[in-house]
Amino acid sequence: MKRFKIISNNPLVAENHHRLLTGSSFFEHNREKFQLDFQPETVQQVFSRAEKLMKSGWKLTTHPLPASGGLIGSPCRTLIMDEGESQFCRLEEEDLQVLKEAARRWQESRGEIISQSSSEELQAYRQLDLWSLESALQEIEKFISKSGGANSEAGSW
Image 1: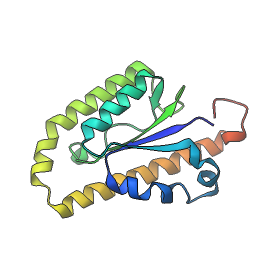
Image 2: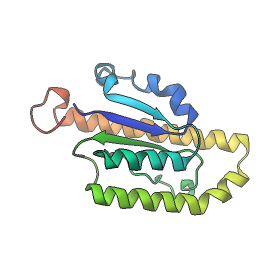
Image 3: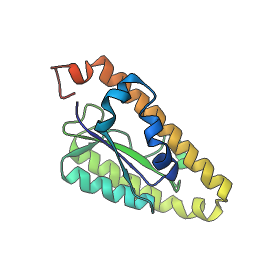
């Protein structure tokens, strides 16, 4: 099975990543394939780290923009990337363009959200980001399990 990196600036992800990877037998057996790459400062650091990884062959597994447009400027962002040919997303060039567009859109909207965020709102952004990660991990588990997982000889899993 290929390796995954969870890139995040969300402290809740850092605090909970072991719990997230012990919730099922799939993750119990494949926990070492999912590494946390914690970037404690800004979303921009998450995007920069993802771009560096892309240039060394990693692919986006999750989309760098949140599902809700209201969360584009969120001060928390978590991405999942996989090593090698991606079964989840686009070609590398498209990945890079999508990542750059997400960074641009975040930069445009972040000031409004950050300046208006109380500590309770910041905690809510962190929780929403954590829930998005949980959902993405569940989808990855389903996808890999359906494709034969680590025991499959077909594909790169």
